[in-house]
Image 1 (cartoon, helix red, strand yellow):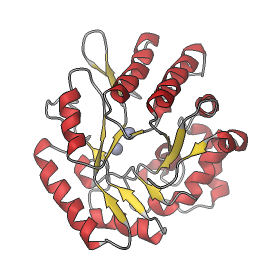
Image 2: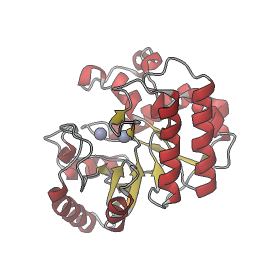
Image 3: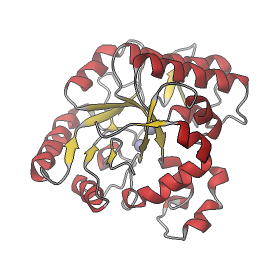
Image 4: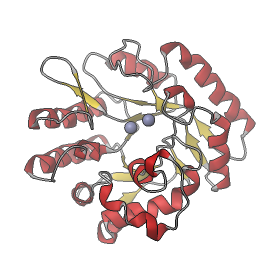
Length: 280
Ligand SMILES: [Zn+2]
Ligand SMILES: [Zn+2]
């Protein structure tokens, strides 16, 4: 079982548990026997492009965030290795700012939540329907980010399935573009566990501890991981890993159950073909 996780948020982004201290995340990882973790909260933007509230920390919060991680790193040395990081989106023109964020941290997770449309407005997954052209652009941005050497991990590569009705020709094409680029640039893809969590143990934004058989009934509502995407991914020479994408108290403690559900969605045959990375 994977004993590390590089996708954790903090209260600073505004949509994680606001009363959960950074240290509580660390303590949950230790409780689970994890050897390594990274805080990869939603990055601040030097140029404020994403205007939504409660999505990311402010640029001025960077220093305090990184100092706090450093403090925890020292406090928990010998128990768990703690890294700093950000979850970022690639946008053309923002390369230098992203490289600055990379330079001050250990891990960059690319969570490509949006692309520019033809009018230079942000097209956000889950909020708007994407045209085929914008869907391809999503894959191109991910490739471009890798080409620039920005991400260490591609988070939820299959997030583009939000608001898509089926996995047709264009969805397939996007999957191939992403996987091909991941193979070329040797960047691992993440099987994200947060959408499963949100539809099962965290249904209606409240933690429940119903048995896993009850949780299973909600799996049809889960958009990602997307079975078809991972079937395609399994045909490529790429690395994969699970990402908890922790935002809430108790989420990390459900890691085993969430992995079990993810594997059920993806299917045993595909899971066995995928190349899971070790601690690195
Ligand atoms: Zn988030
Ligand atoms: Zn994300």
